[in-house]
Image 1 (spheres, rainbow, N blue to C red):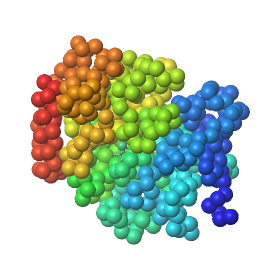
Image 2: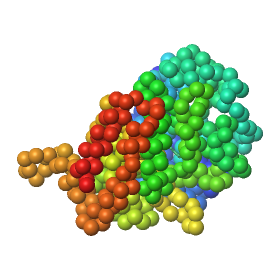
Image 3: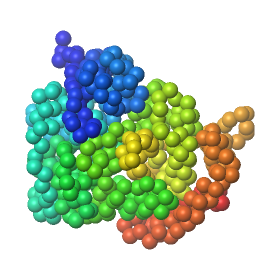
Image 4: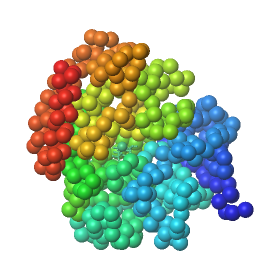
Length: 459
Ligand SMILES: Nc1ncnc2c1ncn2[C@@H]1O[C@H](COP(=O)(O)OP(=O)(O)O)[C@@H](O)[C@H]1O
Ligand SMILES: [Mg+2]
């Protein structure tokens, strides 16, 4: 029998609540992914892997799920695997690192598994995967002393060159930052930490324990060839969302060795740098239904799941459905056609008490500026564009918005008010797009045109 047919084993730990603890054991056979919570973990009443695969429902009973094309692992664990695309930054970073450890030519799930063992901990969210307990304990108990270094010269690699896909000096990047915890998504990014007072040109590795004066960030880089001006666009979109009253993390547009970049404070960490339960809607919904893509679910069904699912997705369903509706409208009004299920997440917010709600806004980038993303098809709502009820023409935008609002329990009056508010709040958007300096004219024109069309329909 070849090595590929050996069951794979790993352990899942978490630093939820500030203390590293083992959550349970993971086995992956050729057919199934299996996970069992530890006895002591079940008794703690903490969140588990995810909302659906929660200790309160499964207790000590092994959770088993057949492997499928898109999910070798339970969805909350699958989220730790960098996307499959061959040119994915995180995936390549990890593979090159593995190659330096004599693990070359990996493919398929064997590659994913090796990547998980080195970068499946310390990333976004509350779940840490390790090869075994000894490695987990070593990782938690011997964190390197936190230091900040200037981005300018001390990093002796040219990340700029690296980003142009990608010179051979990845070795040096790896030596400098090590195997970095994984982050999903398509845009190149690194998890780093910066002074809590804000970006000042100094960076450190992500925190692993309480680190006073330091906050964790996601640092996203611009790939000039593919998405020219994207950093300016994302920054503007974050601004528009803040202006419209959404909770938006602090962010700093900056320059990383000559490359435009955007540092966004992480909302999945608390003031003591401890993780908070965080899970994307994709992970939550795919845990309960057979989804294959992050756009496989109508927004209307998200609203329905918020109301009717046996699993409590949020603490305040009315508020959350209104939030989702407003996110959709502002996405339409800013030319973001990319508000799919991985760009919407749920987390446990701790302030006065713990409340489960949508996370602050992330990734609101107006991707319709780029011809290859000038679509709304990854955010299906209200049967938009579909033929329904024997009608002759597909459902139009305004009709679809009404349908979705209705299914979200939002009254006609309330819907009109919300739309008017968002229209007013985004009035200066196109002017501000026109003023951007790094976005090519062609992309600005496309975006402004899309936004004008939507505004006209919604007015
Ligand atoms: N500020 C943040 N705090 C915590 N997690 C974040 C933050 N921003 C992004 N993420 C996580 O990282 C993932 C990738 O980031 P995102 O901004 O969506 O990048 P991309 O443009 O590549 O999709 C998101 O799906 C989300 O899980
Ligand atoms: Mg994203």
